[in-house]
Length: 378
Image (cartoon, rainbow, N blue to C red; front, side, top):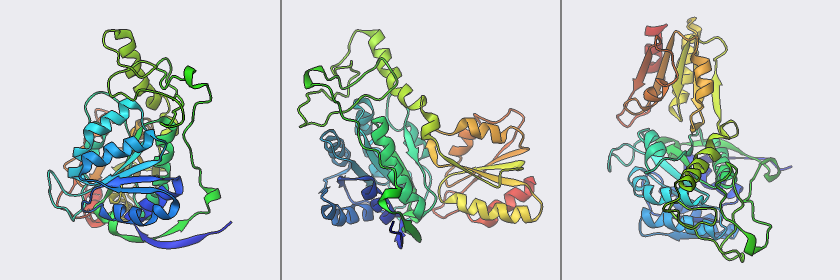
C-alpha cells in the first residue's frame, strides 16, 4: 500500500479527487475563483485517458456534461455564482432525466457579478432551490483542502449511486488556500460505478417510477435505446401528459430516491458537543473559525459546541434537532445575511433563541468575533 502527502490548493484537490473517483470528462468556462479546476483538468484528464472541453459559456458547459454522462462518462463542471445561475435550467433537466454528474460552485461575493476574488456563502439556498420544480438535491460543503479531495470522490459516488446531479460548494478562500493532503492508495477509496442494465435491449426500461430505488442506466452506444426527456415521463422515458396518477408517481420517485436514503447520504461533524448547551451551526471554511472560538470559550468554562453539516442538502435535520433539544441557545455562523439561521429555525424549540452571526464583506469571519458573540450568550 503506497501513501503520499501533497501540498495543494482546494481547487487542485477537487480535480485530483475527481480523477480518483474516475472522472473521465470535464467541460467548463473560465470564471474566478473556479478557473484553476478547468485549467488543471485540461492538463491531467488527457493523461488519464479522459476528455476536456473548453465551452463557450456555462449553459453549454452543463449541457455537454449531461450529454457526456448519458454516453457513459463520469462528468464534472465547475463554476462560480454567475455561472452557477446560468446552469440552473440544465441542472433541472439533469434532475428530471436522472443523469449523474458533479457541479462545483466555488462561491464568491454576490449577488450578480459581485466581487469575483473574495469568498462568500451566499449560494446555500441557490444550491437547494435554484432550479424550478419540486425535487431534492444533494449538496456537499467541505471545510478544508483535504476534505475537498475526499468529498469530491463522494460527490461522484452519490451521483452515480442515485442517478442525479450532485453539487459541491467551495468558496474563493478554500479554493486557493494550500494545505497538506494525504493521498490515499486507490485501494483505500470506495469508488461507485454506474449500474448498467443486464436485460436484453428490447426489455430495457430506463426508469421505474413504481419504486424509490434507482434503475440501471444504459449508456448511449451500448445498444440500448432510451429517451432522456426533461418532460415528466413514464418508465420508458416518453412524456406523460394526461395520466395524473403517473405524473404523481414520477415526481414521487424523484423525491423518494433521495429522501428514503438520507441516512446513507447525509454526513456531519460534531465538535465538542458532548455537553454543549450552546450549539453553533456552521458550514464550510467558516466552521474552522468557529472551532477556535469554541476552544477559547471552553477554556473559560462556557460549554459551546459545533454542529457542521458536510452534506448541506439534504440537511441532517433529525440529528441537528436532537443536539439542539436541550441547548439554552442556538447560534449560526455564516458569510451571508442569515440563510442557515432560517434553516435552524425549522428545528429548534419555540422558546429557544437563534442568534445569527453573519458577515457579508468578502472576508472570513474571525474567531475573535465569534468568541465575543458566544461570551455574550454564555
